[in-house]
Length: 262
Image (cartoon, rainbow, N blue to C red; front, side, top):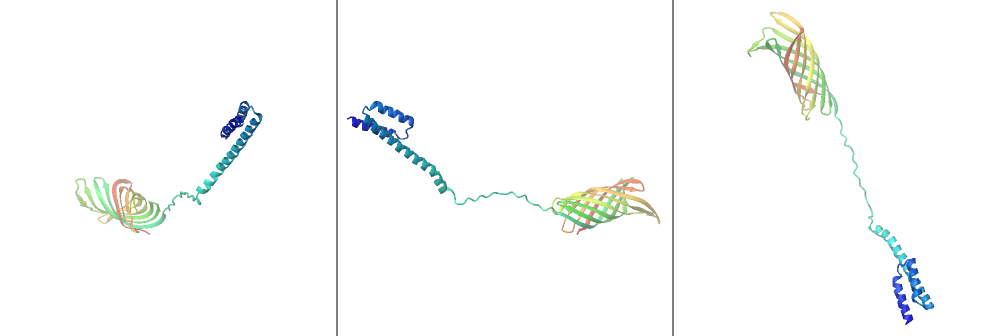
């Protein structure tokens, strides 16, 4: 009977031996010493307990080894054969700056109304211009030499009645002009202009002529069309006439239908 109870005690200990620490082992040894009086039986139980602990330790090592090796196998199985890393590289867009230099040759029609004391003198004429044109993107700059001629056709009184000139009054001179245009589209632009002319005004009546030194200064707005080499334009602005030291205001318009760039 003692042997059977001892065997049952060994089986119970074996079920508790898995994962037993050293402290727990000492506790079990003390329990064996207090419970089993037979010395040989105590020795047998202790041996069986030691065997069970050794077996549990070997099983724990095997499990730890499997756990350590398992992730490597899993990673090797699940890792893709080829991983292609594609990165988007932002490259700044290169915009070629349009920078052209051309020449312009044009003939413009001129209409000017001169405020001459209490009447308006209506002048018409033409201007020949040779200019250099610098284009940078949508901006156009022009600097040119001009030859201008004007003739007084008629005059208008304050009451609105228009009369023909009783004497011939002609102006001829030369000068420079400068204009700027911003091309809103490829075929249309707006801008401004200024010019300065120096020449003489000849007033002739009954065969007698008088020559007066005259300067004309212009400033105003400019509207351009760009149709291939043909570049017609219209300008509207203010003019200041200085005739023999006396200044007169005027409104002036230029229409450049025969205007070409090459």
